[in-house]
Image (cartoon, rainbow, N blue to C red; front, top):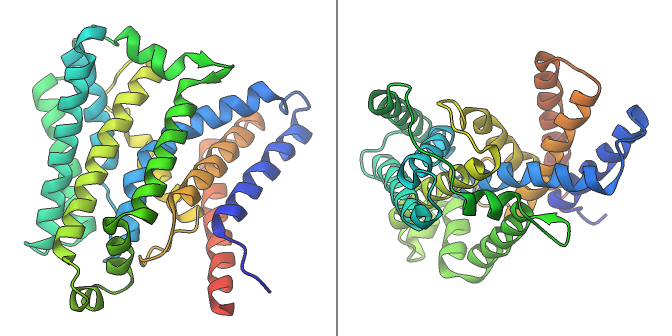
Length: 311
């Protein structure tokens, strides 16, 4: 029996949930609602891109600083641009540089100081959050550039810009993972770091670069998220931390590393967003939503695990 790719399983599940929601609310199933769900999933998918790379790299890697970096990216964009579209490019450069620097510190701490990834990135999250509070003291001056809002929320052929940006990132991630030396070495490092090192792979360099890219992509996600929310607050990115991990896992990327795809993460983001929309339409409380999310994770991990055993 041929193995069904996890990305396909997740995608089919998201479609099934969409039509299931139509049974709960007959007016739910329509093109406008489908586009809206994909748009909401786009921000989670963009934020989870770096998390995908980190988890593929193995070594019990999970980036717990993602939520804090998302918030920081949005705040920096808000403050540096001051609402001016002309200053958006400057804000973008600063945001990407700061996000990459945070990821670089995470990578260096993990590789050379040998701090466990969970501890290092959790500590960095605290540093970032504390720095935000110390600098802003809860007062965040600035504004949202009109160009950013138009880029993210504006529509072309009826489709929001956020979806086009997500599709573009998906193609870029596919190219990086499947057509570059870094992508090949990343999977090798995730499978077995010692074997990869004996094969000539610079394992330390790959890991450091991976966490650097994770920070950069999280900061970019914060910038784009600001264009959607058009307001900024101190906990903006916190709600994306657990879903960014869950989207990667639901999409079939193995937590042990060495196996996965960003297309799987994209499908996982759709599943989580569709599930949340369905539960909200049923007026299910947040506590029960968490139970459902956990159950979905357990079921899908069980299915993926059995498929690997058959192989």
